[in-house]
Length: 227
Image (cartoon, rainbow, N blue to C red; front, side, top):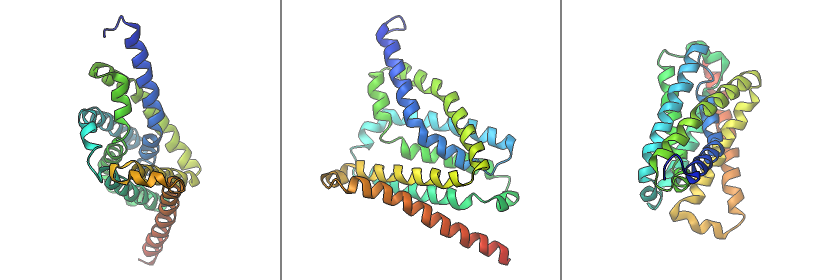
């Protein structure tokens, strides 16, 4: 397959569409992780977080087929993503903005890359399939999607600052994604035999994240005021 083939461009288009569809959760993570940074650090966090996440996704594609066959991998990833969603929610407090250490930019980049790594376990197979084993296509598709993800993250971050309730929706979305990861784990595929669980587990984790994150956030805020 070379650049003069129609199949090359149709495959590239397919990869781009897949990347865009799968980038929604990543944009939410990036927006939440960089919400409390100042404008300059926010730009750096979004750029380097996205750059690192895409790089890891490319590497992960090579071993995804093996990883997804290992029992509990996605379930563990879903559990970790739930923890990340709760942490992001409890940390988003305007009153704590001035208490952020200089290392907060680095922390935001770590969260973005780690969360993307967790969420990409079941996503990269679709991209790899569209690429047909052509890694040039894979890298091109991901590189094209970078500016779109960055723009989406910047837009979401700005909206979250204007409307704080969007933070709760974003955290809930990550909880929902974590639930889907558990359902798709090779060990827990039997759960699909109970149709109700396909809705209860993702939505239950979404609600769980919002409630627990809110409770911890209020407790943390109360403790700060008492100091």
